[in-house]
Length: 234
Image (cartoon, rainbow, N blue to C red; front, side, top):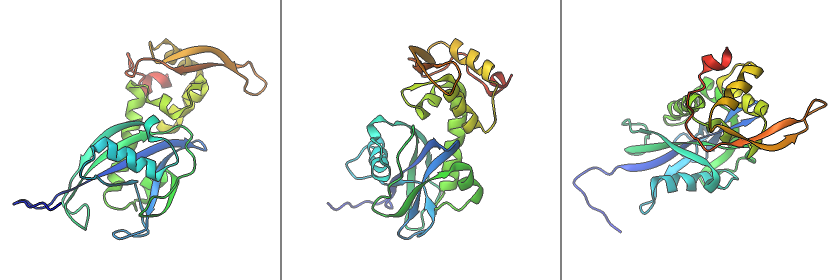
């Protein structure tokens, strides 16, 4: 199909900040580019939107191609749009970025134009500052969005299996925020927040202590009142 226009051609892509927790670190999926531009550099997974494709469909397709998980079960939300001139040296490109959170994903799998894919500590990627395109800014925004949403949504449960202990939930907050929290205060705040978590009636044995109560995500996505960092530290 041939298109003609009085306006310059504008390309649309999707880029995805995929976050998970591995070995007690907040990690992001990174792709080592196998083709120019930025050949050999790390980048976020993503690609061009096909002409007959919805934006979220494109993001889930790219996620499927770059990871070993079923994208239909992934918590995915639109992050922001990036369109600075020159962000892609090949042509004028606007990218719609997405944030995905995964619980215990398998090993990363490189897509068709990638030489390698790996889960990398997010702080390391941000500190090194060597991501291709403007992916440094996109990753920064994605991590900050996740940190902020811990306060007012149930996004923390997306890092966990369907059933979890309060200690495991607290560990998510500690890893993403980067500092420890008081266990007793956290337990009280979380279990008293309506609709955040629900007890399953089952327990899980951990070590020699009393079996820990198992919970599942509640019905409320928004938390009222918010679980602010200050309230959880006190």
